[in-house]
Each structure stands twice: as structure tokens, then as C-alpha cells.
Length: 312
Ligand SMILES: C[S@@+](CC[C@H](N)C(=O)[O-])C[C@H]1O[C@@H](n2cnc3c(N)ncnc32)[C@H](O)[C@@H]1O
Image (cartoon, rainbow, N blue to C red):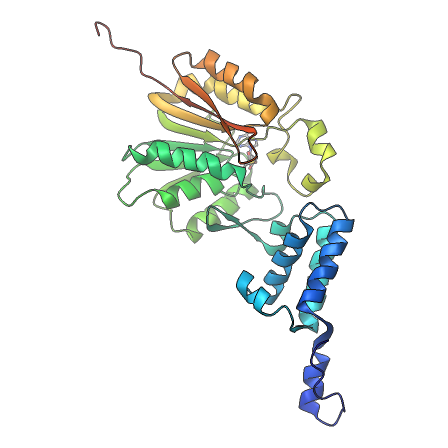
């Protein structure tokens, strides 16, 4: 039970303190919220409850655990219950807190912008590895969304890298958020933004093409209630999920540098098809499938090899 100092009603100061304190401790509020979220079918109920309560209380993880036995202030309890109700109704945690961590960086997110996913971090890691030996060049992030890929690559590249990163999206809402994230992480000198349809506007050459485009089929989007709040424009890849990826691959030979590379995020069911599409468009390329942390085929990457010069 929370501390009930001042219950005798004689001391206004104590009464005020009592009035602001809930009957429940932080631990009790967490357990109750977690049970509600679990009953509503949310996949990570305890984690969701913790993140929302930390957001309301302005505490980091350690701070929350140090105060588990403290009573919950009433104002915080009201705000927490409101957020839990919205989460029960299906709103993503990141939309409720307005932020999602991606490779150690906080990204602003909101309605109309896809919440960055942990598996996309693996694509960024692969890109950073590819860029290690290259002090310059042009990197293109197609379907930039919150800017998770472009901004993180820009922020993690070493000082002195003197190339440029271009982030393109067809959505003005997404680009507004991406630009905000770019400023937040101080990489405006490296990242620029284009509102456009895939790469139709781009003449090249591009050294590294990265894309996490919509790749789900409409039935996959409909079957997953967790995706309800996220923009269809960021999820739906057409009848077989590959409308945009196919267009991008078909166009790649036109603008990719002869010794460039590409990395695409996909649905695991599409891996072999996408490898075939890349192989057909870029016959000289060495194509590989990279698994995510669950062992599922999540990225198709390709290194272009310059054709041997005549006489060699
Ligand atoms: C799956 S989200 C990826 C967002 C971000 N790159 C990430 O990894 O979190 C796909 C993005 O592609 C954008 N998009 C959809 N169709 C597009 C098109 N024809 N050209 C450019 N971007 C497009 C959507 O607006 C959305 O922001």
C-alpha cells in the first residue's frame, strides 16, 4: 500500500500529498496494465506497459525499477491509463510516446510514418560495413519514412566521410518527419531529401542503393491488426507485395554505378523471387540473402562487379 501520511485530515499539506497519490504502487499499476494488454492480444504486454509508464513518469528503465514500490501519482495514473487504453485499441507504442529507438538513436515518429523495425538495423549495419572502405560516394535510401536508414547511416559514418546521402519518399508527411530526425541527429550536411516516386527523378550514378519499400500483400496487411494504425502507403506492396521492389530493380541498371551495391528489405517468402529479379537485372552482380535475428530471409544484397576491361 502507498504511504498514507496525513490521513487524519488535520494537515493540509499532507492531505494535498495524499490526494495526489494513487491507491496503487507503480508495480501494481504495471501488472494491471500488462494483464489488460495481454488480454487484448498485444504481443509484448509487459514491455509495452513499461515503456508507456516510463514515458509518463519521465524515467529510464533503472529509474522505474528503483521506484516499483512507490505509490503512483494520480495524474500519472490517469495519463497512463489513457495510453494503455489506446494501446489496447491497437495504436503502436511508438505513436503514443512519439519516439522509437533505432540503432541507439531516438527517432520521432507519428501517424502517417512507419515505425522503424529492429530488423532494418541489420540492413544499416550491412551498409556501414560496405561503406567502411569507401571515403566518398552517393548513397540513396528509397522509401525513407522516418529517415531511419538514411539518418542512421549518416550519423554512424566516420568523420571525414565526404559523400552524400539522398533520402527519397513519395509521402510529404514522412519527409517532414525524416527532416526533423535529420536535424535531431545533426546530419544535415550529409543527408538531403527528395519527394519523388522511387528513382524516376534520378540520373545517377548511385554507389549504394538501400530500400525498405512496402513489401506486404494486401491480405497480409489486413490479417495483422497490429498494422492497423500504420500507413497503408508504407506497407502495401501490391498483389504479390513486389510491385515497387520489382520496379526499382528493373530500373537499377540505369543508375547504379558499375562497382556499386544494393540492399533491399523483403518479406522472407519473397527471397528467391527477389534474388532472381536482381540476377536478371544485374547479371554481373554477386547476390546474397541475409537472415534476420530470427533466422528469416530478410534482406537481399548485391555487389556489382565491374566487367573486366578488354584485353585483361
Ligand atoms: C516500409 S516504409 C520504410 C520506412 C523506413 N525506410 C524504415 O525502414 O523504417 C516504406 C516507405 O516507402 C514509401 N513509399 C511508398 N511508395 C513509394 C514510392 N513509389 N516512391 C518512394 N517512396 C515510396 C512510403 O511512404 C514509406 O515511407
